[in-house]
Structure formats: structure tokens, C-alpha cells
Length: 141
Image (cartoon, rainbow, N blue to C red; front, side, top):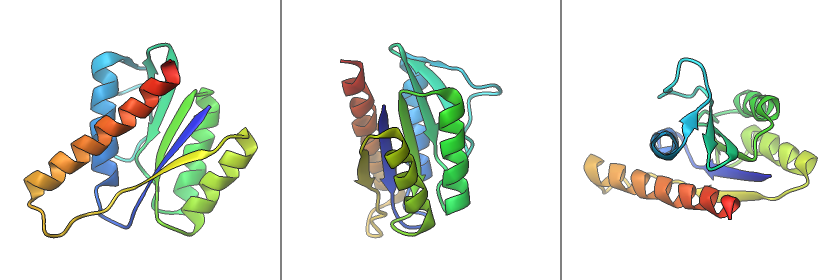
């Protein structure tokens, strides 16, 4: 079981990054979710190289992350990926899941660079998504 947490402040690109990740998972896998593809905070599940991978872009507060964790459990996923804030209840909720699963969260910071153009920020989000899919790929090996 692998848990990946993408954390950052409001409007720093967490959701956009995880939506790019979902695009990559669709290209090389299969969405198992009804009414896919999703492009908002709604969680989505993929079959990717024999793994069940859940991606939940929402993570602004504890209630949302706890709902994401319930979703991950319901799908019995091999890889769970969610956004959280930098501190507070959303982080606590993911730590609780980490302890329950007996694993360690792989944490990655997401920040918005205010001096970048929107196009450059999008490229940064896409590169972060590529990094995340490489982490999923290491689970396959």
C-alpha cells in the first residue's frame, strides 16, 4: 500500500496537478469510476498496470480528506493519492489513515510561484504529475 499526499496552500495547483495525473492514468490504464472522466474534486479509481490507483484531488479540510480515505478503503486500493493543506485537520486525517494502514505517506509540496506565467505554472503542474506517475510506476516493479 502506498499513500501519496500532495500538500500546499489554497490555489497552488494541487487539483490541476492531480487532474493531469488522472489524464496520464487514463492514457495507460483504465478508469473504473462511473461517469468518468472527472475533472473536479471527485475521486476517481483506475486500473493501472495491475494496480488499483485512487486519485482524490479534493483536500481542503479534514472532512474532505476523511471522505477521501473512506473512498480509498471502499476501493481497496494499492495506491491512494490525495491533496491536503499544509497543516491542520486534512493532514491529521491522512496521518490517521497512514497509521491504520501501517505504511508511510510520501509527502510532496505543491506551491504556486507567483512570478510565473499561467502557461509556465501549468507546465510545472504537468511536470509534478509526471513525477507522481513515476512514483506509481515504482509500485508496479
